[in-house]
Amino acid sequence: MIEAKQVFEDYLAELNLPEIPHLMGQFEHYHKLLTAYNKQVNLVSRKMHPDNYWIQHFLDSLLVIECLDFTGKIVLDFGSGGGLPGIPIKLVDSEVEMVLLDSVHKKTKAMREMVEALSIPKCSVECHRMEDYAFISRRPSFDIILCRAVALQDRFFSPLRRLLKPSGHLVMYKSHSVKDLEGVRYQEILSREDELLGYRRLISIAQRDLMKR
Image: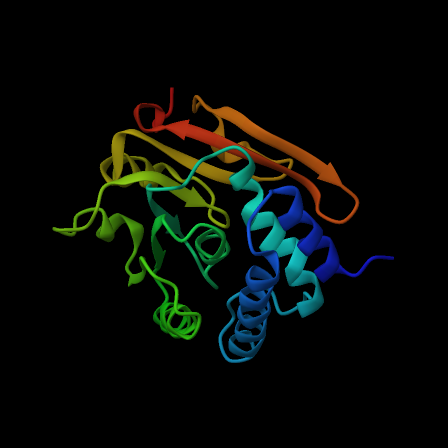
């Protein structure tokens, strides 16, 4: 069986990304940091062996690259936790402006230290509840908001609309269940199933459609 790290490297090649050896070096550094910090702070499930980060976290985070162009966009990673999916996206596209948002101080402290250790440009970390961050002055308006680990609750609709540009979209990482999207108009922009990753799909919701119907 091909090891997970090699599967991830092959996936980077499928995406036609430049300088893959250099990129793999960055991801190896991130992998070590995430593994170390996760022993101190619960950033990702501790039931998962770090070898599985390559596919279940890194490759999974990058699926959105297949269907969206992030270059020059301002992006919010809502509920970022260990920097996922924001940090992997930043590592493959340095031109995107990324904000990693989480409400847990220990997690944001770890993310700040990882971003600094990886020397990632145009990447900031904010410690706020999303409902509060939406009303902070001088924060950016976003082209894309990514949500990989948080269900879409009714209380999020208004602040999400406020955070997004009128042309913006919320993109949610989903598997089979989309119960939290009942009554919401959305578009499935990617569907993928394989033995290693399982069933994953990406759901896009336009700013104007962030409401129950």
